[in-house]
Length: 423
Image (tube, rainbow, N blue to C red; front, side, top):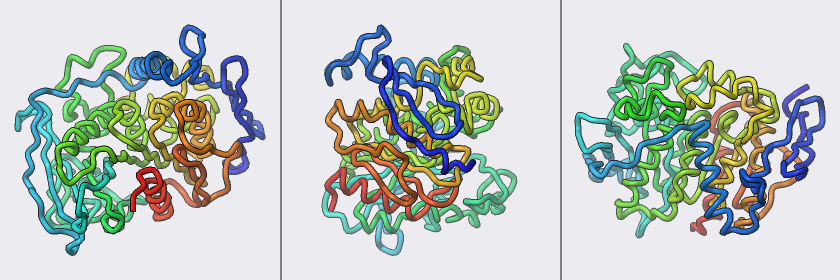
């Protein structure tokens, strides 16, 4: 049976749970109702959600899955080492910023790349996301600083990294991942782009702790709710918006956080924690992102905690093999973003991410969006391919596999235009 044939039929409230009913023999289980509090009482209104249920869920996910992140340091500084250079054939002004997380050049830090449309006459909205292989990899712009941190090598479906020598990116690595980042189209739309490299935050390996930013916060290790890599990436995104609110070119009320694959997991958690993000876009985020664990198929908790043990906290390991009995699920994490806008995107052939489960996760979060005044509803059935559905909570599944394609960006631009009333 193909992933596409596992069609979602309905979501029904049953005894305080949202039951995902699926055609076929896919094992499913009731998922927790996001509007039922830990003591069994029901959320009655927006005030209940804001003052009781949202803090309760945020604490739950922090403790049981993503871990505790450090507070922003009062010593944090921004060093703008590229203060505004014409770039991209005159379409953009480029800025580059080193974020000194403790104010010390020898302490934890990372670089952010920012492009602002040159034609802009006022503050512009921005898309902020983490990239996989370096700021230099998303553009052939020769002025972008090449990371000195480790970069994986070889050739994959998304970037030719044979340019990497002994773990270090070279000049030949410029633009090798540009296909996933339509920067000039963003400039034409009037959107700024801000991005950071995942490897500047964490090497993303089982044994990479000593070279991660987490190593500068030892007090948050050796505990069940330890500072994790997904939590670390999300935390770094918040430190980026700390800068963006200071940049007079950026409309800080209109900043969307974007992420693909594992970085889509981080983007959702960043928006769940930081209400300064007015929108979140999850592209193929799968398990630990938008997908419901309770479906019991595709990538599961045991695999996440075995292959990527650094991604989540120690407490999450006690749920290995218990996906369908999990006392929470990802729809509740996405509900933490409501009523701000959320776009969940899938790919038809991305079976490992369970695209239908990503839709089910978004759909199961919908009651919270409705309670808080969100616009539009998702259909009861998994929509046809290449069709965007929803409004403030939106979704599509496109043809093809695990990737970011022009079709995806076309939907994201339309979504952000609609949400931001952007012209």
